[in-house]
Length: 209
Length: 356
View (cartoon, each protein chain N blue to C red):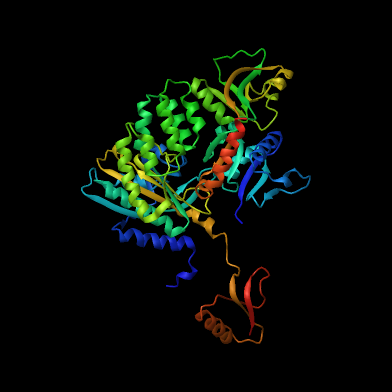
């Protein structure tokens, strides 16, 4: 049997995303069972879910291991995968922003040191402004960089701003709003298009509730 | 020649060569090297920015070809009289999308250069569809018309940045992205609606013409529909109108297309009409062509043979050299794959073991 493979992002956002799929009529009860399985199938509906690291969803979809998936707009902007972006799910809302210590004052006489895991988003943002920057690529604990003078500012995801505040940082500039998007492999859309469209339509109805 | 032992990629190469020659295309052989300058001037035409460059014996900076079309255009006449038809089967060297290292990539394709008319466009599209059919019966050829898309976008008078964002959203079939790209400008709702309808349309020519009724792109769409209808007569719904196929408008004009086969996650064929590239390179002819990415066909061969050989011919110390050679030869002549040895390698999968 040919399944439609769906990559969901692990974690809180993924739980919300699955709840939307379920409400739209694409449920898979075994996914809620407490077990060590990696893939979950609903034979009757012809769908198979699996959880992957949020930043890997786009790779699974682009390479066709998943026919569709849900990824944050931040990941799509950063890696520009060659996929269709079919729907804004209007969940997982946050923003990519520039944050700095409360005392920060930009010194235009030298390159701005920017710590981030979103090197491409940061580069594109500062290129538009004509500001010379020095990108410091980090994989986590980005907030630590300006505290230890590794960077002047950070470019990172900001949800409530609480972590920033607790570390003496504040948002100095918003770059782009972010939310979860339904993405699809281009080739899969040619051969499993009907099912993908049904899911897109079902999720679209959910976003309106 | 026994073609049974050829891989499906090798069989496709033979089939494509014969297909293209039957339509009067002649093979174009070229050097592996090209002047580096050619690619620097046309970098955004290339699929990858990375080029392997080296200095030749005269000190000139050269490159290992990352692309074939640019070389064919460069070596074509300033103005071709009539239509020149060439096909190629060449290796190119580039970093694949999402890859980290250079790869040697086998590519087949064809170019039709000169006074291009609707028949030539139709012929190239037919050959694209037939090329896909050589790879798999289960294929889809998506075709768009950049002239239609750009006629609508140009009438919106957008900045280059907004235009870029809009084209990206069209390529992603991203209706909400089209709205977002146009949110900060005073764009006509009607034109935004047309773009969104074109990107999400699932029907055929009638639906396209209905969407474009009264727009500046209508007459272009009528010509496009005439070509699509001819293709449908031969290939049915394997040929589809898909306006999300967008290529760089600095090079491509008119019809652009991408081909997919079931089992391969990316497009295996890509092409279009590139009159603007010709113009940029000082040529006054039109041109259309496509490339088939043969390296991707490996993915179809994952269902490998159950056995590595038909027979393992096991010989002991008492078997004479002549007997072993004769026994192996006889079985090979009868069409079997034979591996001979004293002890069968543990991982060798064979249908039967014969002792001699």
